[in-house]
Image (cartoon, rainbow, N blue to C red; front, side, top):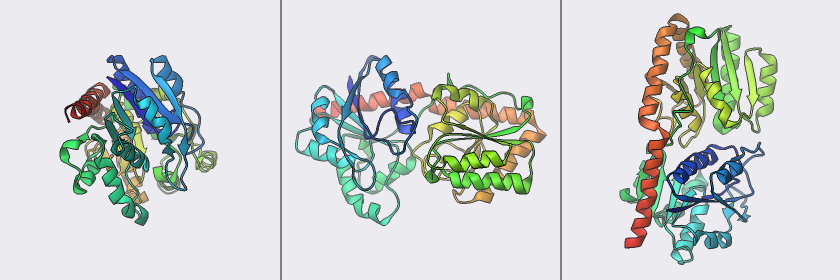
Length: 380
C-alpha cells in the first residue's frame, strides 16, 4: 500500500498532529508500506524544529513540499495544483481535518482531478462560534465526499453522525502510545517532592492562564512546601512562565524538550496536569499515563475518552481553577500519607493504558481502515 500523508503545516512543527504522523507513518513503513508526506512551509506559531523531516527520511519516506494559500483565519489551504500530481503516485490520501482543506479535497474528488481514495483524521473540530455554525453545512458536505473519516474521540463521532454522516464511513480509532518507551514511573517513596508536570504548547487554549492561577493558589494559599511544578513546552505565553519560575523556587521551566527525552521527565513525576480548553486526544496525556501518572485534567472531549474520573485521575471543569487545586491536593494527600497505595495506583493506570492504547494495536486499526478505503473505491 502506498500512503500519502498531507499535512497542512510544516511537518517539522513540534505539534501533536505532527508527532502522530511520524509515529504512525514510521510503523506503517515498518509493516512494508510505502509512505510519502506532502507538507507546506507554514506553522501556527514560531517554534523549535522537531526534526521530523530527518526522522521520516531516515525511515524511507518521500517528502513533497507544497505551496499554499493563507486565508485571514485558520489553517492555510494546500495549493490544489501541487496536490494532484504527487497523489497519482499513491493508493490513498490521508489528511488531517484542518479546515478549510476539506473543501479543496472535496472539489478535486468531485471534478475527478483526484482519483485516489481520501481519508481524513480529526485532530480537532470546528470552534463553537457563529462563523463555525454558519460553515458547518459546507464542512459536513465536504467530508461526506471522503471515503473514510478517522475520529479520535466519541464527541467527534457523535457530531458527525448527528449531522448525517453515515456510520459506516466513521472509524473511531484513538491515539496510541509507545508503551515500550514510556515505562512505569519511579516508586513515590523515593520522591522528596510531589512533582506535578505540565507538557504542552504555551497557549491560552492549552489552559496556561489556568496553570498560572493554580500555581499561585497552591503556593500562596495552601503553602505546600514539598510540591514542585515542572513545565515543558514553548509558545506565545513563554514569558509569563519564565516570570513565574523566577518568582517561585518550586517552578522549573524546561522550555521545549525533544520527544526522546520526555520518558525520563514523566518517570520522575508524580502527577500530570492538563487544564486545556480543547483537545482531539492528547498524546502527552497518553504518554504520562503510560508511565502510570494520575491526571488532573479538564472535563473536555478527547480527555473524557482517556481519564476515568476517580479511577485513573480527576476530571475538572476547564475554568474551575479551585476545582483543579482541590483535585491536586487530593492526589498530594494520598502520595503524602500512603506512597505504597500511590504506587499501586501508578501500576493500575499503566496497565489500563497498555491494554487500551498501545500504539502497535492502534496502527493496526489505521492500516485496516486505509485498506478498506482503497477497497471501497476499487469496487464502486
